[in-house]
Length: 117
Image (cartoon, rainbow, N blue to C red; front, top):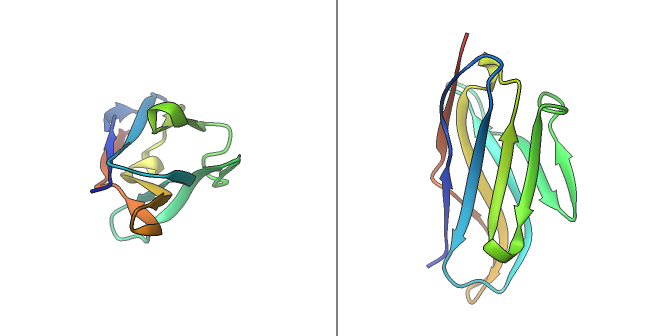
């Protein structure tokens, strides 16, 4: 069974940094794309950054967040610097994968990031 497992969330002060990780477990054939999304209380889930050959960022995190992948370790990272209270949310890992069940998107369980002012 394929699963995405996130880690690295926590409580940090404004201006601080966190590094999120997302590891793919289970048997897969290919990774087409991976990304990070977040959902703040009372808000819809929104894209933070994606990695699919090239990288793409939400305007709100450009210059502060960096997405990277280690395909050999099947791991996605999100380095978050200069964090702001508005970055407080549950961060979810997403992956477009090919498995024995075919190609589909997978979601992790989420990791909480809280930025205090």
